[in-house]
Length: 394
Ligand SMILES: *Cc1c(COP(=O)(O)O)cnc(C)c1O
Image 1 (spheres, rainbow, N blue to C red):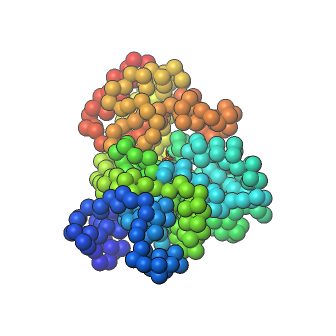
Image 2 (cartoon, helix red, strand yellow):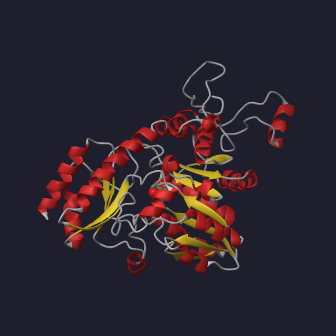
């Protein structure tokens, strides 16, 4: 399609990076399930290895994976993307590219659990230091910057506190300090937020979540704003080897086409459910960027096109009451992960964020009474009715 950039969001989601197959006319991108590609002759092989267009070996590039990379890169407004075996392979691609001996990173304190734990547990061996701060106040990021800070790494909305970080402000702070800004955009998806347009240099996704949306594949993606940065990332990525499999890419291509439809529906359900829960007598607090009670409601309206479909709430009676909720629901499933077509509910303090020391967990706002719900696309009345029933059990 010509002029894809000028089309509407739904059109771009469905068509960006997609081409009818020249040989067969196949409308869906075929799965090029091959590890290697034949060269026409020695000169052709040499040309491909010099960097001229042409496929060589699937870890270095594959047409199915490329169709997905181009799709997400266009949705994020980047110059290109790199498919990864998982969201964590994408996170580590960014860390490994921009951090090294004697460097320092500033990160959001309530990052996705493993994104923080891997920095604290593994990277010190390589001489990497990190400070984790409440980035919902950009001043905390500025205060944590050091001479050797090379990477500012934020997640917004953050998991599971749903705090927001001002991306334009953090981009300025990072660049003033000679660092780059990388953003984990998993919670919002490219449909609702585009960090590169707000000044970030790199954006990454766990496509396991909203982008794929069907709870049937684990996958990641990194998108860079400029070609030099993309080339640096690519070099690290193909040699560390956490690359994407073509079949995995094909599944995500299938999933992403309905991203807009799914997100609209899930967000509508989340908004209704959060509005209803906020007034429920058994609910002590709720944090959802779509509610005016969210401390950064205005920032959300400024940098996001919608509040998303994940929120956290506390039930009166703490951990025990929270357990009553998650043990008795019938419509939501008790499972970690988010962004699927079905509603999932979990308890971060004992599950996804259990590996973070108790004091730091509390400081990051991950309290024992916090229940996280990732709202899906079910019939709204079933969701509300089910949660109403379990709240009555408390
Ligand atoms: C799930 C998740 C990841 C990690 O992704 P995987 O696909 O599980 O490796 C990273 N960041 C966020 C915000 C996530 O939700």
